[in-house]
Amino acid sequence: DPSRSPLFESVFIVQRPHRAGAGESGAQSMSPLEVFLLARPGLGFEVEGLTLEHFEFEHRVARFDLVLFLIETSGLLSGLLQYNKELFERATAERLCAGFENLLRGIVARPEARLTTFETRSQNVEERRSPESQAAKESKLGRLKGARRRAVDLSEVSVVTAEPLREGELLPLVLRPAAEHVVPSAWARANRDLVESHLLRHGAILFRGFDLSAASEFERLAESLCDDLFHEYADLPREEVGGKVYGSTPYPADQAILFHNESSHMHCWPLKIWFFCETAAETGGETPVADCRRIYREMRPELREPFERKGLLYVRNFVEGFDVRWQDFFRTNDRAAVEARCRHTGMEAEWLEGGHLRVRKLCPAVADHPKTGERVFFNQMQAHHVSCLDPAVRRSMLSLFGEENLPRNVYYGDGSVIEDGVMDAVREVYGAAAVAFPWREGDVLMLDNMLTAHGRNPYTGRRKILVTMGEMIPGQAPQQ
Image 1 (cartoon, one colour):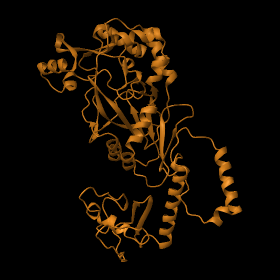
Image 2 (image 1 turned 90 degrees about the vertical axis):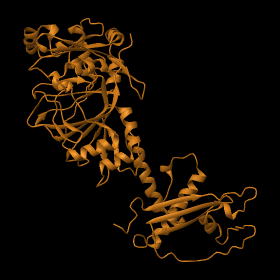
Image 3 (image 1 turned 135 degrees about the horizontal axis):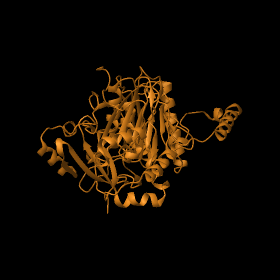
């Protein structure tokens, strides 16, 4: 639309007059706007050597919807408001000016008060003092005093509300549109710092009710919150939906995916993950989450200490027909290239009889968050330890491969066995911290991957959850 400014439609300018230095004239150090505003009648503006006369002229064309100029002189503010007559009546413009003046007077009278406490509407004295108006105010005040305080305090004019999913639970924080036609990606980009602060506080954010219906809209939302989404994922084969969006981890629907921090056993991992519910399961299929800070705090010291001191050793045997092939994982058939990649990423590689490959990776079980500095229990033990398999599956796998050649397993960092009882105790802590909720189509769940572990419950019926991730963090070996 060539009749409108493409970048902004309202302008607010505040200027203070420059003071002339030695050898300068006052007029040379001021802009034409300053001279224009200061030369208005009653301001007593003078410049040595110049005769100034205020010239009245009419602006017939407004370049923007609203333009407010303010200039300060001698401790006073003088202003000029321009407005588009096709959008505003003169009485409306006058009310805007009066309301702004009320706001400024309130700020001067109470500079320590919050902006949301000031009155911006213009009311005449009789209206403010009328019994009906006073009674209405007292009634409103009574309702406010009796209202339950929200866990998250946002401005009344916010187009998005925020509150915990369940009272007393830190995560997830639920963001919902409070107005019609909120474009989630545009809102998120404009409020990126706010979303980041919520994420670091709560660990998980649920965007609900934003009317997202397509993978492209989901990707735009994630891109508005992360400059560089990760577009290569080799740990498990995934269906690429488009752009940098993937299908969720392929896994039997009747089995649960246990709690884990995504790719925490790899040489790098995503700090942020987004899940988008395109189709909710008929029953089940929730994505439970657990606060890793809470897990670290509530784990018994004697249980936590060996993990913190030794770290974890993840062992993976690439066996044809089980899990992903090493050729697909490393995306090459060249053994030398695989060995070079392993050296670069801190993995130990060993070629076995029959062309099989075994890799070992030493990783932390406990880590410090790079932004908050908080200590978190951060690992993928439950996805690897043999005790977490279904008992019948475990017996079958051990009979086929033996413990040393299992496709996946995990040990303490020194190679010693993590006892089944230890893993049972670890899973109990996760279970106590777990929060699950039914998916609704259009939901987007955003996680800080180090602050929050996630899983997936069994389900029936068709289920389609899309995933994208970003802000990759390089892995670190545990401190010995």
